[in-house]
Amino acid sequence: MTAVMLVGDLPATGVLRQVGAIRVTTPSADAAPLFVDQVIRALRTHGAVVVLYPSWKADPAVRLLRLLRGVVQTDRVACVPLDLPPVALSLVADQLAHVAASAAPGVVAGLAPYLAADVCAGARLTSVARLDHVKTGLGAHVSSYLPGGAFSVLASPVADIHRITSARPVQEFARRPGPPVLMLVAQQGGDLAWIQQSLAPALGAVSVTPIAVQPLSAEFWGVRKYTEFVAFSGHPHALSWVLSAVPYRPCRWCGESTAAEICPFCGAVQPPADGPAERPRPAEGARPPRPEPPSEFGRAPAEPPLPRATSPTRPPERPPAPASAAPEPAAPPPSAQPPVQPPAQPPPVHPPNQPPAPPDTASASQNGRSGHVPILSAPLHEDDEKIPVPPPAARADPPVPPAPEAADEEPAALDRTVADRRSSRTETVIFRPSHDR
Image 1 (tube, rainbow, N blue to C red):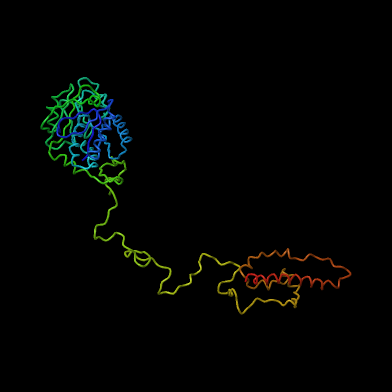
Image 2 (tube, helix red, strand yellow; image 1 turned 90 degrees about the horizontal axis):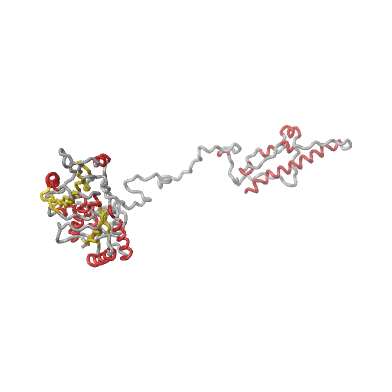
């Protein structure tokens, strides 16, 4: 069971006499301690409390609810604001208390907005100039200053303002309560004949019951003279039909059934109504949606296997060299290159005791390299190709002026100088590959 409380100066209509919502009148001097005491008593008796209050006068109720949460420290109190006129709000609170005797707390809290949309609430007013709680168009606002005018105002289920004329005394209703239609009327200097002669036949009401005036009606409608009404279905199963049409789902946080986007108990945001509340589970005996992968590296049977790099039936092949990579200009083609370490052909080394043969001066002067060109023309290692070679101009021998007394010894000295430089350059080129190995 769930306790239903209504915060505000909203007395009972007297339609449901056997059961009704708990009323807490605000503002008053003892409203706060009385409210906390009643909520604690209701929690001990019922286990959960659903608090209703008018959204157009929410400040007193919000202060009481904040005080209650700070004192009681519980999440079993749901707060539900409703945008209804006083007579309709008092009726919906009593209807909700009637359903709460056999419904879960989350179902009761989610049913309140649907019951508010199932009634037809409004009033007959002489002016809409100060009507703040119902949307008013500019034309109706201006025409309310004309003398002798009256308006039929609907606040639920759809806000509508209609200027009453002899040709159209009432507006067209988009929704009507289910038959039989019962009507409650609270009159404060208004026109009761318009209710009985025009409105009741338009709604198909079978009875019109006068009730006491609500204290907050003048504040809601913005005038001192009005005729407030509310029409609802009097069928015995009307509340059951509304209850069965509400889509409920468990809250993801507290597990309480709810039909709102935000759980009224814990405040957790719920998923959209058209989507599932949680991930669907497969039925018993059904095949799981994701089968186990086969032995070949996790590919589903329905998907074709991807081509592998190697196959057990084909021998591995040596990957070809990329076509975009161009060979170096100094290196010969791969087929003409000798092996890296040829076992049968060691590099030629001159004996240290035999000096190299003297070069031909004529050819040396033509080539400009002092006779070492035949050795460098052989295939070298990759690292040898990267060794910078000084320009020929730096290798030229400086001119030596001939001495008159040693003119006959000049060819021999020149031959020894060239031979020494040639031997040093030859050793540098020959021993570089041995250093790499």
